[in-house]
Length: 423
Image (cartoon, rainbow, N blue to C red; front, side, top):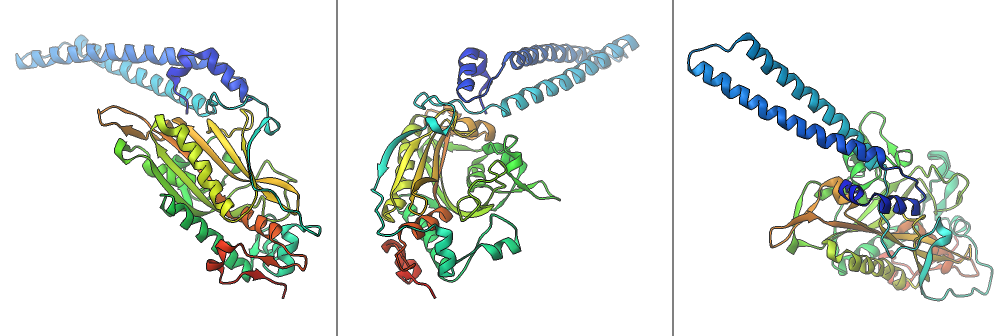
């Protein structure tokens, strides 16, 4: 959530920042509500002072054995009623202000390229050169079904479209990828954590999933609980309403979780395979950092996410997202895109974002410095990385002409085998 003080002091700059995010915003009503809020607060304070003074006079009369006049008591009750009315008005104004602020995306960092959509993203780095197969590479769903490790028909029968059943060596490969990612990130100083897959409404608001992405969430029918779309949600909320000491930052956490997404806006896109399913596994990296270090921490987060792809020898590239393609809560985002040999294109496999104080303001997470200063800290997160898309990339990149798939060397101690062959 944005700081209303920043909007009040720089409305034109904020209007331009929103325009860069393809959002036209008129701040006049917000500023009017804010002025009214300050006026109501001042008037309510005057009434409280007057009420206190009248109460003192009533107490003095009673100590003297005198009863206050009916007119005096009526005045006192009138002040009480006015205060209650002011409090109702204040609650209404604060609700309007909060609703307005909750609908505003984060301010793009100055280093983010201005653009309307993904076409304006800037590729900043290529890692690895895609190898050329001596045959026409197949798609991962073709490979997986032929090897008997992926079954989409059964998944559709059980749950519907955009689900997958893993079988035989496919299960072992999925577990191997998860374990390899967790072990690698822990070697980089991340602490592993496992959190619930169901979270409350406050947690969804805290990371920016609500109210903006309500249509994307799976909500329980009989409870105010939501299935997580990413473990970023429960992990970041661990420190909601907490104050972290400067010497305990940065906090670096890594978590495996299943993720659940409606993919409401992706009708007709990536309907085959593992790329855009309603349920998938993912490793998430989350950081809590001091504001002055968050830029540097984002760059290291990108390196940490990309490191696992390099160890798998999977070519990938890094894109800096434009203002029009940057996520709602993010100030700056890099996408890591892995090479899918079957499609012959790069596909997103990780997004690494610096939210600055946007989430921390919603969740009231602060850092306390050694000199006793307190301020909102910065949060960052990145996929470290999406397991299903890694599974797909491995099948496509390491496929052999006979239909078998070589297991990347770093995974073999987890799988217990080095090749998947047709039965």
